Image (cartoon, rainbow, N blue to C red; front, side, top):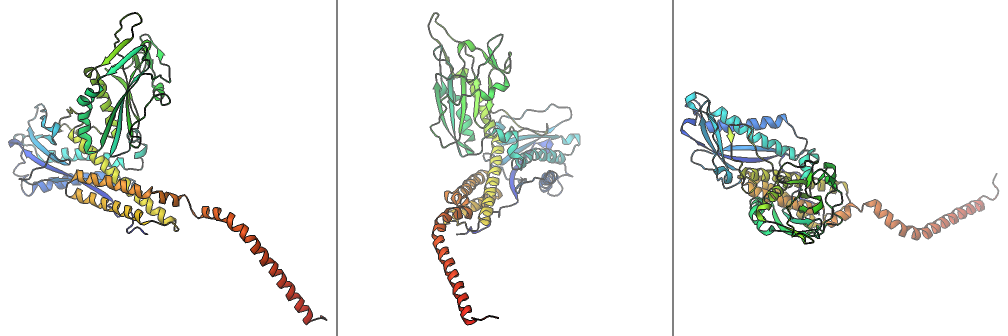
Length: 502
């Protein structure tokens, strides 16, 4: 079978629209001169021109490019701020010398931003300030998206740190006790997860889902010896890569197929307490821990132990309140591992709340959806192009019908991404991108395709020649013998025809 279409029909530029609704207060509306004509169209064209100019100045080397497209809604139309990609900008006047107001907490849960522009009473133009603030904010995210699919993206610090995208992850929270004979530990992990971790996982479920597990390990020896200090022990930075004892710690997951993210709360043995990171003074914050790229995170606990005196075993119980800074550290590490980018304002005129009770704001979630959408589309397109090149380079390769169907379905899903984006449906476009990437990988890594890829014609010759050569030897011998007889017979015939040559 043949793939019906070439594997690169998708758009060169992936256009991601951003729906904007403007709300004005009385003193912030455009002046009469600015309102002449269609000012919304002028605003939209100015922002998109700035985005296009920024793309031209910073060309990407990849085959796919990304463009954010601003769409300003008309009067009477409201942005569905419950949906990713739809935003309401509250334009507020700010007189000269006044302090910057604090945005309302509405923007914590909804997609609401405050934009401060010069007051009309001061005679300042409104639209240029609005154009500049919106364009600078969108250009910052557009640069991040374009950088994520560049040829050098795979070697960037962020990509080396975060997990590759997967629709479902397994998270394992482990309480590791170095010596339970000397110190007995326990924790309220169920209530702590419910209070601090599950709200974050619920908000980010639009991107990926998570299977959460927990365990307690009572004997978890360190593979390295901490350095003794004036007060306890400490670990130097070059010791951290060897901290996790993969050989002796039980870190198995009940979902071995899924990518597993590990978070470890490590309790040192009493004689090593307190154990710090970074030298004798250690970390100055309430929690000392570190991130393990593409694996998880570790927090070292220094509990205050209770002793009954004599040979009574010392005990410590980590309650929900004590686990709060630990879980907050785990969430901060999980954000980095999943690729969550902190959304900041390009100027002090466009502001929004960064208060995130769950650990991720709606603007950060939207940024993550666009980020993973771009990566999925780029991955699917690259995989299909590689599949097409492989089939074209191996003329003897047989492409079975189900592989052709998978490739064509992946192409249809890529087409669906563009259709959903055109309608402003960011979540639906993201879902289609996940399906496209999955279908393309299934087609490329199909066992039949892999077998053909690693079984070229040279291997066929090497296999069949040992069988053909033994059978060919007697045939060749008979042919040579008959050829010899034929030559002798021809020579004898010539001699009889001319018995007395001159």
